[in-house]
Length: 108
Image 1 (cartoon, rainbow, N blue to C red):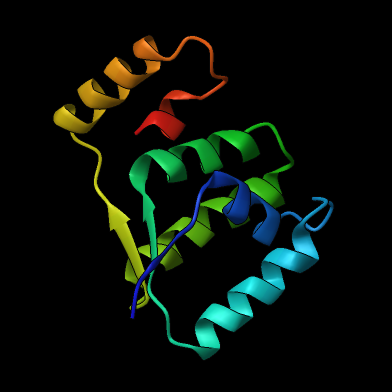
Image 2 (image 1 turned 180 degrees about the vertical axis):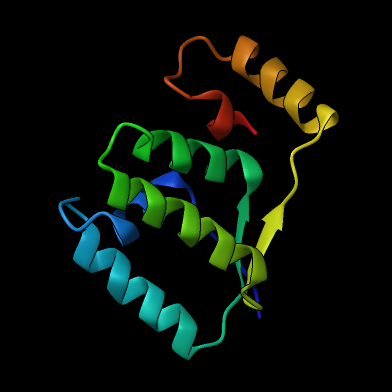
């Protein structure tokens, strides 16, 4: 079964109840779990996810950190480790496409 990539927006919507796409993210998550599909994400995505919640209250910030810890041990979540080669390639794409509003994480 082909894995599904989860970006920062998905993880934010899944955790943050006030996020516009929260209910849709929950439905997607439940659907993926029922199908036992693998979810692929990256350490850079998770860094961006944690950065988003860094300015929120203590409880939400703590829940974001715990969410990442749960992902690390979840059998259906694959986290691609960040490395220098990935960073360099992402930076090259970032510089090649100044016409896009892509973050470095998007480029990775």
